[in-house]
Length: 147
Image (cartoon, rainbow, N blue to C red; front, side, top):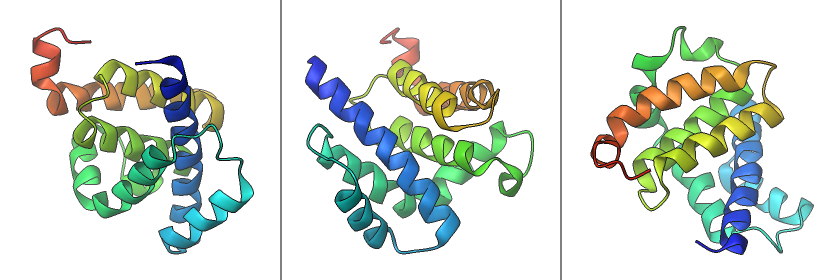
């Protein structure tokens, strides 16, 4: 994957996690938030197709994503830090719905987002949960050693 594509996806994830956080906190329609983000941010170097895929995919599959996360959480989903919950939802979506992205990349990107936006040790929690989820979601990829 070329560097421009990687950085475009990284920017897409960064904006998507912020937009998903706003969506979860405000209750506004995802389309309103998307419009707001497109106006407020320079989208020139963002993989906008991937941004939309993430932004619309998480709410569309929210209940199944959370159902898949639940066995790996040590507390009720409602008591999670909202930023870290947004990162977990995004990571879970990528693990299940973006098979072209290696699971190690999904984990690394989620950890980076949690470090940037989450609480002091939130990245450790995100890493633990998504690493366990990856064992289920990407079992074949992991067993074949395709990292």
